[in-house]
Picture 1: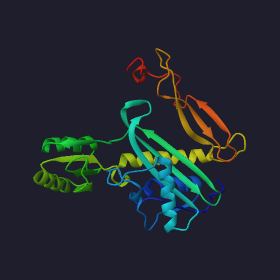
Picture 2: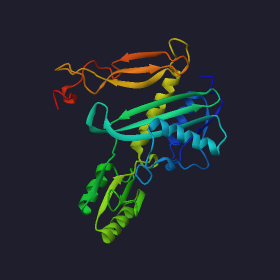
Picture 3: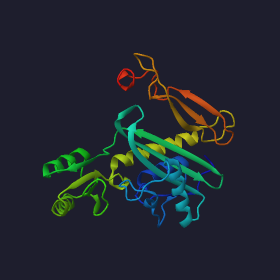
Picture 4: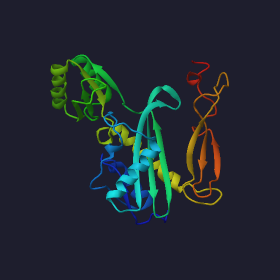
Length: 280
């Protein structure tokens, strides 16, 4: 941990993620966090789809770090990236996956942390009338969680983002109804408009600290962390492998030593409801 003591750490964000990330890093690594005065992370892709993400989560994180360092001459930078889809234990359960990457240019090392959670309000719906709009608002936790409105799922003009007030919501709703006779609503998944996602980012940052503190059994280098979750946990009934994690593969970036930690979710069998054989 002495490798970070007193150093300045740049958090590559334009969406106020430093609110949850900085306190954890400053306490856990004894660094001094700051944010860029200018950075456009949306240039690497947007949740609402105007700009497509071209790479996977890890490559996007590295691109964010590089983007931030172009405008800020530092050697310690952290980026965060989220994605939404099926939970690893259940393909029918929506989940939020968050990953953070810390690049230490001075020591030519990278450390990561991640977090899966089904605690997300990630949702979208075609809205027919005021009643459907009110139901969607209640479902996603508006106004503490922001909304995006547009005429349909494939259209980006006009698009109204970051809606967090009732007056603004109805203003845009009636505008779309009047001009296009259709409204498409979705959660604004940018971190500053989504407290649930902020919580997941905090957990991923805590996991980063845990990983940095985890030392390689062979060379004692920090960052002996999970690089892959391998599925195959057996079903309680039929014993066939499921999609749930059987082991976590840990790897050292210094000496390349690897170790399999079985049953990473603290269970040795999976519920049959998540088995493709017992519950196809």
